Amino acid sequence: METNIITHAAQNLFGLSYLFPYQRLVISNILEAARAAGVPLAGESPDNSAPEDGCGDRICYGLQIVILPTGAGKSLCFQLPSLLLSGATLVVYPLLSLMADQERRLREKGFVPVPLRGGQSREERAAIWEKIKSGESRFIIANPETLITPHVLEKLPELGIVHVVIDEAHCVSEWGERFRPDYLRIGEVIHALKHDGLPLVTAFTATASTPILESIDRYIFGSAARAHRIIGNPDRSNIMYAAQGCVLRDTAVRDLIRTHKRPAIVFCSSRNGTEKLARYLINELHDNEIKFYHAGLNREEKTAVENWYLRNPNGVLVATCAFGMGVDKADIRTAIHRDIPPSVEAYMQESGRAGRDGLPSKAIILWGPEDEVGITRAKTESDKRRMLNLIDYAKSGCSCRRETLLNLMDYKGELSAPETDCCDVCAKTASSAVRERIILDFFKTYGRAYTINEAAHIIRAVDIYGWTEDDIKKAIHALIEYKKLRVITNIFWKNKITLTKTPPTS
Image 1 (spheres, rainbow, N blue to C red):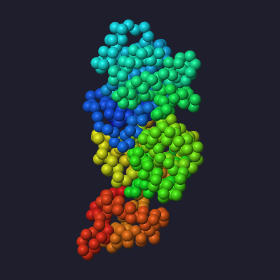
Image 2 (image 1 turned 120 degrees about the vertical axis):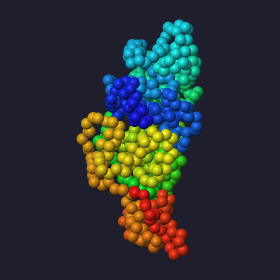
Image 3 (image 1 turned 180 degrees about the horizontal axis):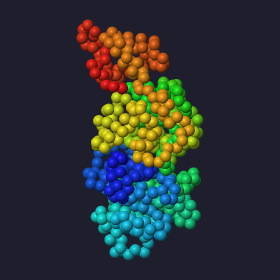
Image 4 (image 1 turned 60 degrees about the vertical axis):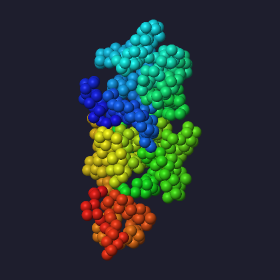
């Protein structure tokens, strides 16, 4: 979600001048998923249009497991969104003492929380329902035992709840499987709220063992959709960041896969895009160790791809942001973004799939004229600004990319000592759209002299990068489409190619 919205809310509602990057990331995921699902922020009109291709995957960012140590400021991660979302937030606590403490803290901050607990009279419950429905209170505090009572479970879908928070989520496993079986029924509560779309769900825990996380996934999020996992500080010193300009993105991905370490993951913005790119890579590289993954696959298909990828030391996965729903492959060496993500938070989350074992890895983002089309499709000015921030990051070759990313997230802490070069800028290997520049330079020298086919044949003969004539022809057509080159129609140079009078800069 747009940095200004989160920053202003933190300052104006909580008096905070700084948020930790992981707080900003969790909040951004909640708000972005709400927008993608058609849930407006407070004061906005509902967006009832169907999500565009890819947006369904962005909705998945509203399903999160957040692993933070005690005292790390996790409460702000759901308190701040509760004041921005147009619907109510339900927070589930394991103990009555925690409920009472949270209620006290919320009232001190000016919230109007309503607690749901056992022993309340019919009149008390009626007053609670009215406060929620009227909008006087947008914050519900409860424990599992109260939520799964028939009367409450029947009433919940009428309350406009859009965000469910499970605090101390490790209790689902540690207590639910031993002596509090109602904890294992939290999934029923979430399911009851699906009448009006998939609710946003955030589970917080300080216990990050694999069995605990698997239990949280199973009992809270179910088998149909598993949650993203967010762990504190986004500074990843073992990742080298790079950017590459290009006109033919699929061709650029192909060449990167040829030259970079595997396993690799390639992020695309749409479901259709993942399938097309995967087929292209299989054909071009004559390699069957490539598959696609997106939220449109059924559970069996997802599980099959996940199992294949997790066990494959040479696999390439082409995916939307749906990947990461509990899938934790530690040894991904290369993360490539074919398309510019919608925000720096999304980019940090997705590029961070690489190198989770702590070993040197690389994250590469592609940019080019196609981004201008993507910007025109942005629905709001804030969406445009968020994309422009990343496009500027990708195009810039002047400052450390790692520092730039962390600055975009308002990270104020010390950078960890890099285990490899921070980025292509620091390593002095940053480059623009090299092959496209070769083509433009060719026509700058030999304008009006050659047709597309003639030029492709000549360029291929001297190209040191290994493109085929077909690759070069496609690039020339793309440069014509983006108005960097033009076809002459004058009878004296008919069908010859030349630069446009003022070619756009690469």
